[in-house]
Length: 281
View 1 (cartoon, rainbow, N blue to C red):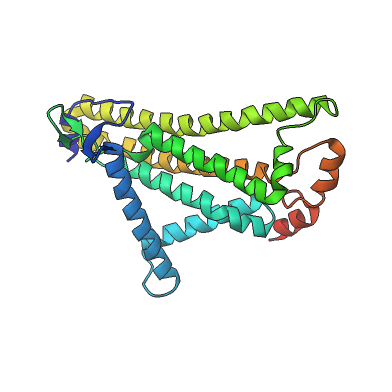
View 2 (cartoon, rainbow, N blue to C red; view 1 turned 120 degrees about the vertical axis):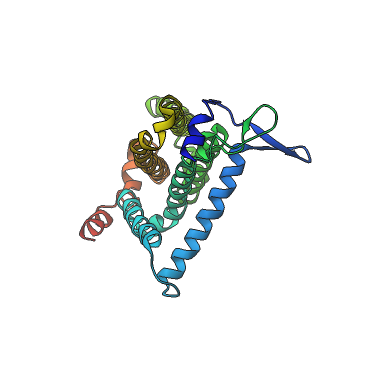
């Protein structure tokens, strides 16, 4: 399979290629591998749940998932000390981590590239997060979720007060609010393009190493595959961490200096008592 991957020749495409059209709906090669990754991930989660409940025995995969989940949940609790809000935020952020790492790692399989369809030799499979539409969708989910959590915590008026302040009353905070609004869009673009760029660069590296080494590619690609597996975990963790931080920013009251000082006493993110309790745990 490795030699087939190497002999297929370099096929580098920034956008996902269409492999089928069902009733006017375009099915791309990233959809194919993305659906497979989702099925595998859901099965693994149910398998881990059964092992945790004692219905089935633990194996290496379920232990790794359980250990990773605990570590990620503790990270969310450190960013958001209030346990109530941490439990609300953690499911989304942890799900994003597992989804990204599963899609990244599946995109490293040797079947991605050699298997083609159509007269133009379009690859049948492409990594899910190697599609800008996928990474952009994940970024939209994160930013929209951050706004929803902020609305729930601050209320409509409080959340809008983060961005829109009367310039006659406080011109400095009015300018800061505009910068905060611009920052929301920059976070959206930064999340999507950063992940997409790293995934695409990794795929191009593997393709070129395989093409250049040809017959010795099974041996030459091994260290690069290990490196990409490591990078996949790091990229998923970075996306998870940034999502958690962006959501936590919406749980901090904004406004004029007096209101911010009074409300910060009750803020779940900055309550001294909650911080001390989280440090003891």
